[in-house]
Image 1 (cartoon, one colour):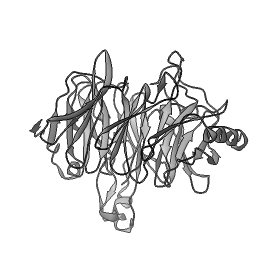
Image 2 (cartoon, helix red, strand yellow):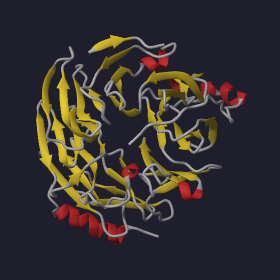
Image 3 (cartoon, helix red, strand yellow):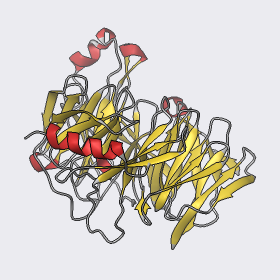
Length: 418
């Protein structure tokens, strides 16, 4: 390592959720070159003068569209910034409540979402697509864990991490820690709170597993029984979960492999919370299936060493953009029936279904605009590309509390907490 400075088998639960959903439902990543832009709708002087009256964090949403980025007030869903940028981009919260990392050809470019800070006593400026870029060839996954943000460059396998909060205070970019992979691949890394690094193994031809590096950079363990490793998350007790094409790989001081019930049973994306030992994952059992739509999820109980597949009924499918976790650690899914379904994370039992958007079909290509969901502070933000709209759903009441009508077609989204 170097440091540098930079300017369950299918069971009763599965059958239960399928039956309940039937009765409860109603009507990989490189960006292109970017051009700096300025917001088309900055906050007014009156709004700034009233900053002292803002007593809570003001979250904001960043949406990608063909040709730019929109920044929205997460309460009203009003557009507060329209920033031009060329090509297909992806967005991830940097973890500090204010910044978003945008993938470009140059690397991870920093977007200032322009949020209120210090309990509303001051205005942070923006929205602004800054000139600050964490260099990366084929910028890929962003992972926020503990007090660190970790970046993976698919084109080289290089890994960089920085203290998340330092991005707020740095003039330019904060100091980074860096590591090198054994070979370039589409990968991901997690830095644990003691400085241990978990990082994927692979080449351009395939991915095989995960290795462990201690804080000095010395390898202490590896597991090469996770074909097609993709997707990651950290659950309660700082236990890490990685998706495989035949189950999941769990690390909590040592590796444990949880096999899928099918010969091919791919979990490619993992959604976790720090208060639950259970991870939510997507699931595909047919390696030859066309399209991006999926019809089952996985519930991975790291405390019980159990992987449970929960099938969904006919008419309810989703893509990798349509899973999230609720405020009570529930599993949240946006279905092709247009409803947001809330499921118990332990049993897969359906707890609620809330109609939000019109029924939709899967995209021809995964990059194409299609509905997506993110949950923050009990509010589910749902995009509706067919209507050029975004909606805010209160998960506690099932009420759509705001709708933003857009002049562009939204694609991916990220939420910063303020």
